[in-house]
Image (cartoon, rainbow, N blue to C red; front, side):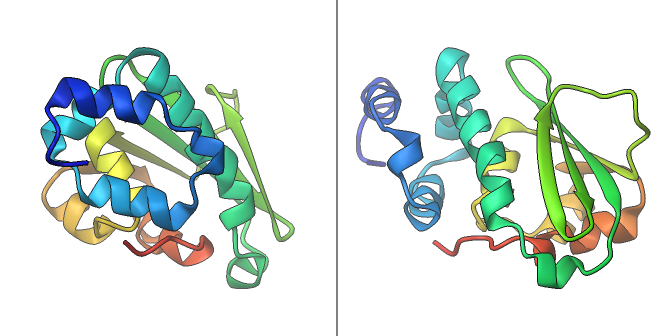
Amino acid sequence: MADNSNGDLTDELAGLDFAAVSPEEFARIVKGLSPKQLTEFMRGELRTRVLGEVFGRMRQQFRPEAAGQLKALIRWKITGESDEVYETAIAAGACAVSAGRSGAEPRTTLVMGDADFLRLVSGNANPVTMFMMRKLKVAGDVGLASGLTRYFDIPKA
């Protein structure tokens, strides 16, 4: 895919049924794209579909045995074409995901751009490195944020 021009690549990705793409395949797609290509990819309706699918899968990727009795609300703010907010509520060994900002106070808030978000959730970026390079901003419980990846099955590309 990476050999195509950006227009062809975006058209090819727009035609994908993201619900049918495995997490491992998604990780390989993201790994093969440059930050510029990822930014191009995350525009308009395609961005909405991709974010919806990624956050929709968090419940299935959740590892309740790793979370134990953790109770936390994590707010995700994805910046790019527009700011998109999702929240992940972890409690009683379950994970619930909702679009938008609730009135509840999050334990931690993660802010990152589109390309960095895709790299993080696809296992193609290290959250600690992203934080140190200021590609990931954290407000609230930094310790919780630094360990979040252990609560989810993150694919490997």
